[in-house]
Amino acid sequence: MQWGRAKTVLIALLLGVNLFLAMFIAETQTARGRLSEEYIADTVRLLDRRGLSVAKEDFYAVRLRLPTLTFSTEGMLDGLVTGLLGEVHEMTSTEEGSLYRRDGNRLLRTGATDFVYSPAQPIGEEELLSTLERAGFPAEEFLVTEKGLALTVEGVEVADYGIRLEEGALHGRLLRAEHLRRRNDSLLDTANALLALSEALSAAGQIPCTVTGIAPVYLAELSGLSNEATLRPGYRVVVEGGGVWYVEAASGEVSAEAMELVSAKERK
Image (tube, rainbow, N blue to C red; front, side, top):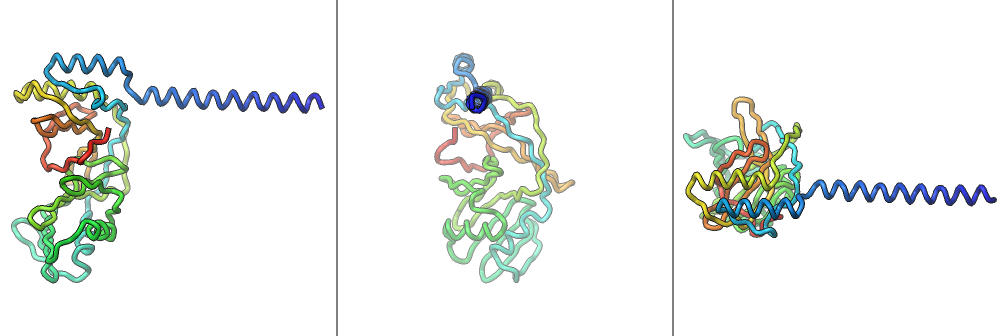
């Protein structure tokens, strides 16, 4: 009986030790995944000296750990055509691209990812999302924004991709990310990304200025020769009075926004 009690106590102790170690490892991983308060404070002071102001509460404090994604773009929008127009429709080639028609509805494809859809009757947001679902673009892959629908891949917004309504027509740029190939690269954290941005803004004569929002995004690059798309991790930085800027997290390359689809509320 004494040995039975000892075994019970020993098992309980071992379980307790394992639980403690599991909690310690989880806390360590969480700490490593976030930038320290001291590091953020030092970065904020350095950026301020360079003319780029950013509040601590607007600082994206999570270390970016997104893979680079590569996938095929071949036939990517074929399902969208049939989803919007049905199986039976007319198609003609124009200088602008491929024009599809049916019952007064028109869809112009101008590339592997870009299109303009002019419906005969106005289309609501709910109907559009259900149509996109039928075309192979699940509703959960979109974020509703002030400008329209922003596309996400694996929960991360793809910069400049989505759908916006303009003068009754839907202007879209979509990717269907399937059979993904992944690569992990060394990525800049928010501090170094903002330092790269400060240099670009200084060169553009837009210093001093204030950052009002920072969010992780994917930056898309298309290759027509190989019918491939590559999504590279990066940051979208909103600058008060200076528009929207992107910083590629692997290379530190800075670029300005092309197609405005900014969320109503920045994710931090």
